Length: 259
Length: 203
Image 1 (cartoon, each protein chain N blue to C red):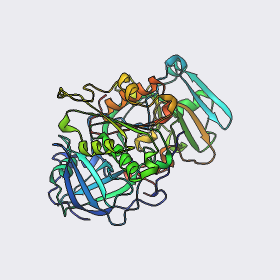
Image 2: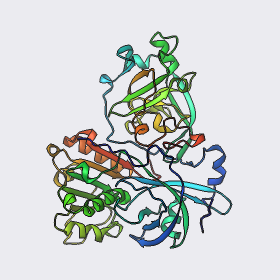
Image 3: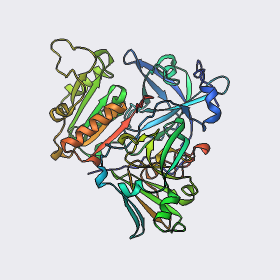
Image 4: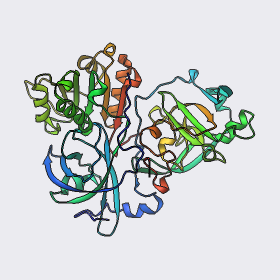
C-alpha cells in the first residue's frame, strides 16, 4: 500500500532560519556531517530534505538542497554533504564549515520520499554513495522507535565506490549487528575488496536486487536514492523483478544528470 | 541577512545571475527528477487524450499526433531543485494547435490537470498554456525525447518551475475549478513562478 504523509510544514511559509554549526564529523574523505542548531525547527519525517542558503560578503547568495540525515527523534538536525568537485555550496559545507559558523536553512521539504514506522513495511532501501543519507534517516528512525521499529523488517543495499567511501560504515555495522536490526549489504564498484569481504563487488543489478531484496509478493516499501544512472538502472530492474511502480520511490542527487 | 564566513561563491556564477531567477544556478547537464521508475510505453500503445469531465474531446495515436502542426521552442528552463538550463530546444505541438485539432475555438474550462504514465499529475491554469506558452513536446535538441526526460511526450511550460512540465503525459483534463496535482499536494507551490521564487506552499 502506498502511504503518503503530508509533512508538518504544509500550509505555512517555510521561513529561512539562521542555523549554527555545532559539530562537524568527517564521514569519508569526501563526505562530512554537520550537526546543526536550528532554532524553531518544526520537526520532519525521515527522507525529507532542506534548502541551504549561503551568503558571501558581497551579498551574493547560493542555494542547494540536502537530505536530512538525522531521524525525527534526534535533538539536532544533521546534514551529510558530499563535496562535488565543481560544486559551489558543497565545498563550503563539506570542507570549510566549522563549529560556530552560521548559515541559513529552510525546510523540511518533500512529502513523498518519506517513511515512518507507522507506514509499515517491509522496508527496502537501495542507495548509491551519498544517496544513503535520507535512507539512513529512515534506519535511524526505525532504531529510535525500539520495539515498533524492530517489528518492521528492513534491508539496505548500499553501493559505494570503495570501502573508504562507505558513509556511516561503522554505524551501519552496529545497526545491522543489533538484535532485530536491519540487514545491511554493501557492494563496492571501483576497487577489488579484500579477501573475507561479505558484500558484492559490482554495480547493483537485477540478480543482486533479487538476492538482497524482499520478494514482490511481500509488497515492500522501496526507496532508491543515488545518482541518476544508478536510480534509473535500479528502478527499472525492480519493476522488471515484479515490484509495483507505485511502491518504488526514487530520489536523485548530484549536479551530474547525463543525457 | 547573515553572511557566511569563508563563502565567496563560484567564479562565473555571479555573471550567470542576471539571466537566472532568484536562487537558481546554471547547469550544462540535464538533471533528472522523478518520483518513481521511468515508465516505458511503446509508441504503438501510446495515445494522448483531451478530456472535459467525463467526455472525450479528442484522442490521438502516436502517428496522428505526429501529423499535427509542429512548433519549435527555444527556452530557458528552471527546476525547483535549483538548476536552470539555458536555450534548450524543444519540438512538439502547442496546446493551441491541440485545441484546434479537437475542433475547439476556446478551452471549455479555465484549469487543466495533466495525467501521466506512472500516476503523476500536475495542475495548470489554461492561460499559462495558450498563445504558444505550452507545448506537448516529443523532441529535445533535435532528437526524440529520451524516456528519463519524459519521452515519448512531456508537457513543456517553461515559464513555470519544471515540475509543471509533466513527463510521460497521456491525458489532459479540463477542470472548472483548480485542484492540486501530485507535488502541489505535497508541499510545493500551486502555481510555481520561478521569477517570484514560488517553490513551496506559502512562498
